[in-house]
Length: 210
Ligand code: SF4
Image 1 (cartoon, protein in one colour):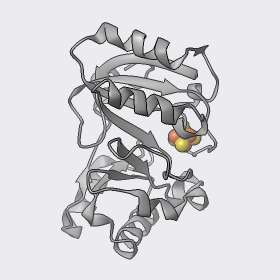
Image 2 (cartoon, helix red, strand yellow; image 1 turned 180 degrees about the vertical axis):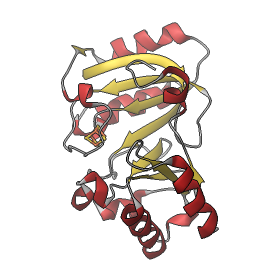
Image 3 (cartoon, protein in one colour; image 1 turned 120 degrees about the vertical axis):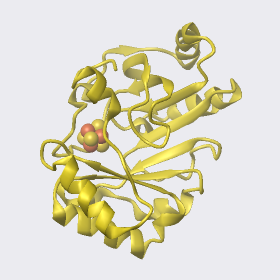
Image 4 (cartoon, protein in one colour; image 1 turned 60 degrees about the horizontal axis):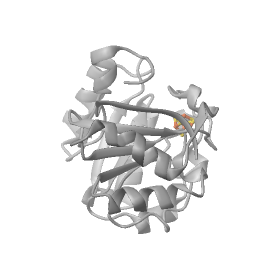
């Protein structure tokens, strides 16, 4: 498989934020979001077989939470097999995906964190809305917001698609949107939407491998 990095850190996003987690960042992405903070993952840094990946992450023994991220993990055909093997090896598996690729082949026990691309990402037309049919109640939907237009768009999509039955995450695209402003908007809205900041960046700054 084609990879960008494998590392162990504090999970900085999603409802799993704060937990120790192994990250497997696969390389390559089919989108080009305006605020992308992992452009380095567009290119491949190294290749490993699935068994070699499993061997590599064994060094973090007793850590059972693994996130497959990118780039966009689902552009590699072997990702489905990797997810399956991680589950068989008793890992709790998170999959961070950009919403553009059909989720029908993702094993059901994988917890999907689906990024719904807002207008400010300049990629919102790439969302495959059929994916809502492949979400389970344990899954999470994430909106990265750049401004009020994104916020109102996200609320509209949440209502139209009955997304509040899943965990809904709103994240400000810093520095485009100030977190305090987003917090005020969410408080006024009074819906069970979880605001998140990228905890790893607060701890270590905007750099790779954390
Ligand atoms: S989907 Fe993710 S990795 Fe791909 S361009 Fe958008 S933010 Fe970057």
